[in-house]
Length: 248
Image 1 (tube, rainbow, N blue to C red):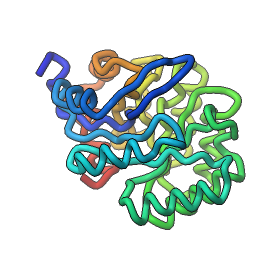
Image 2: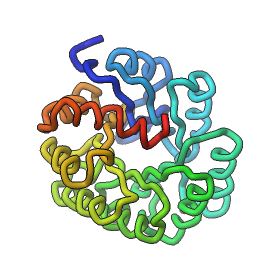
Image 3: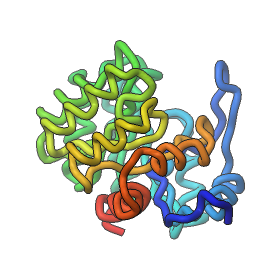
Image 4: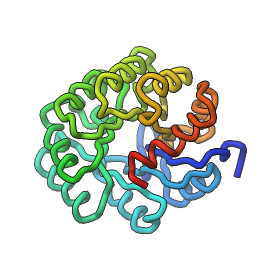
């Protein structure tokens, strides 16, 4: 274990599978397990590389149920077929929630087509993870409106605004306004804003993530380590908050 393995961790956001152009990168189960061992990651919240490859997540989960927390990537723009598939994965395959990538799939994060997904997640008591930080489809304000419409739904704002300072600020503001929003740190551009979120949103509503294969674990770990929270705060962000959220 390297210097970045000091704290036990739960990775609240990583992918499995192949991403084509413009990324041309992939991530398989073998590499995932190596990464988890190297960086002291107890569990990984895992989703596929697209709405068409959820069986990649299912295979990894079946092979390593003690290490994988599976999410279904649901494309709300597909309508009823997507809603039915989500219900299948939650009910029959024991997935632990859903993930939306509205930027890739071409609808806004607060579009009416998202409401049935939110309703299904609420029905099964599962969270909804939502990509944030890219206009025009994945803005923090849109995710705030979604959370407002579904106050009993637990919403994880992936990337807490991503690499745009205005969007990071908006992510924190939305999470402060709506107590059913949690923030996940992968890809966020400002380490200091992780501490600001921890201090103002709540010590229990900020969770560490890597977003493999896009981000190196060492970079994402260092952002939390350098953000200015104390060791208890780091333990909360790296592990305790996700463990409580996922009821581990």
